[in-house]
Length: 111
Image 1 (spheres, rainbow, N blue to C red):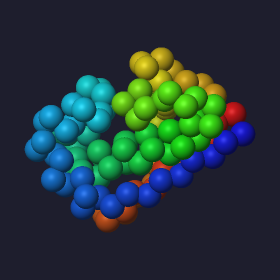
Image 2 (image 1 turned 120 degrees about the horizontal axis):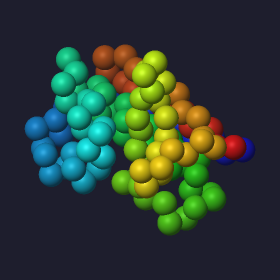
Image 3 (image 1 turned 135 degrees about the horizontal axis):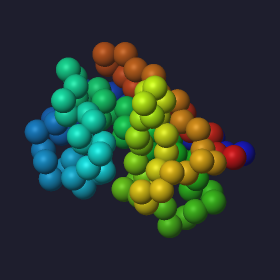
């Protein structure tokens, strides 16, 4: 079992909300579509980024070739975040996200 954790400041991502090139470089199309209509898209982008970082940290010991853009986070109908690696559901990892107005934290546990 491996664990990854990441904490990010929402303020850091506020500037990226209008930077289409950055968004397309870092986030999957579904992640952008999910985050942008939200009341505070920066907060949701930050949560996705933190989750991707936590997943990368949890899996990097097993897969040295994994890069952050290979990872995407999608929500189930109930809102639970799920991990996708290269567009395939990765069932051997759980991720949990939490945020305030200023900070986001993500934890990933790989089995």
